[in-house]
Amino acid sequence: MSVDITAKLLSESVGKSIFIKLKGDRKVRGILVKFDQHMNLVLENSTEYFNDTSQQLGNILLKGDSIIVISPEN
Image (cartoon, rainbow, N blue to C red; front, side, top):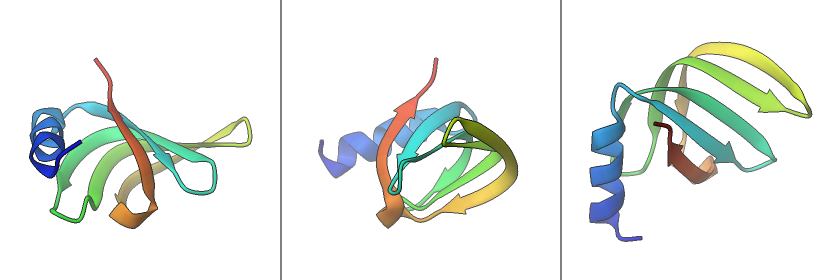
């Protein structure tokens, strides 16, 4: 996927819930607040899912180099 398409998808997802798969088999769901050209993401009301448990994280910054998949939720 090209950078332009990815940036457009993320722009359309600001203020909406997204699901993210991270390195280390961690998953995070939250509301996308903003992002940058390096795919660093700021999320609010986030929850981490790991080993069949979940943990509320609140506001977080995810570094782009740790992200494997970004999926907007409808």
